[in-house]
Picture 1 (tube, rainbow, N blue to C red):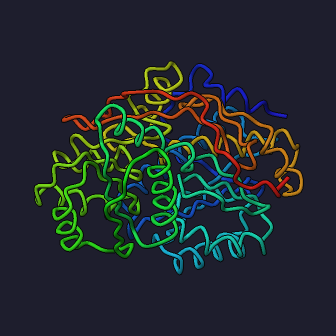
Picture 2: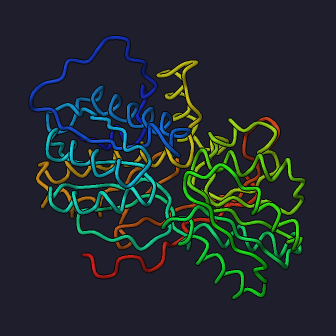
Length: 387
């Protein structure tokens, strides 16, 4: 049996650049990746695909798993519920993948879960989300509100003396779920919410909401929009509208922030990964990404790195189980640890993971300056009935 820990542990030689096409065999282990190559997530999707590609390259270069190579099947979910249903139907029942590892909107995830259940295949969801999505076939290795909201709200209230908050979200499960938690936390810690507004997930016009913000003069904004395009359009309109409140964004990734240029500067963010993390593991990861993709490299971020970690976790679970059979891989997923660019991560907290979190601020060069680190933040109670 191949020891996948050699790959997961960042062995020497992980920075590789494959220049020859890989020949796949009929007995390959096939991992499906459904991701928003079009729609709201299209800004970040290319970085997610690159992260999955690198993980598979490294595993295969080290000998594969159980003597077999891994192969990706990538399908566009259009960043939507309807698109996810089509994508998962293709992956599960036509491509007959062995597992799915995907970064998607909450709407896409919720639409896909019944298909995962019917197909009875392992599913690792790699997007930060609103929490408490539970399915016996699903694990999650990204953050939930219990891990992400407090660092930002506490910084605003304790260090910046913010007392009033305005909440803005995309009108779907993630936007509303994140802001429901945020409102409760703000009020519990003595702050006041002076406005809460939502726009459709594909909205591009935020004029009415900007006017409402201007009318109440909040100390801080807390934003929970769909990753990618909505963050770009909202942020630009807040800047051009002259809004000067502290700007905390609960959903922007580093790659999107870089693409926004001056509009993103000063934005406060909180997440489990930034390219500026000064750890040996992250430096090796960044070197590997640069070697593999060169000048085509998309900025690694808090949506793509969990995808990388999850592909490695799946491979490690298959190796530990000695099989790709779902009934063996599912329990194994809770017991394997990926020591990757975000640190050591185990999905053993009710199908979720304790994560080190970082509060940061976007700098003029597009990088994120880390302000504070919060070690091993617990996800709290998420799926207590799943064993």
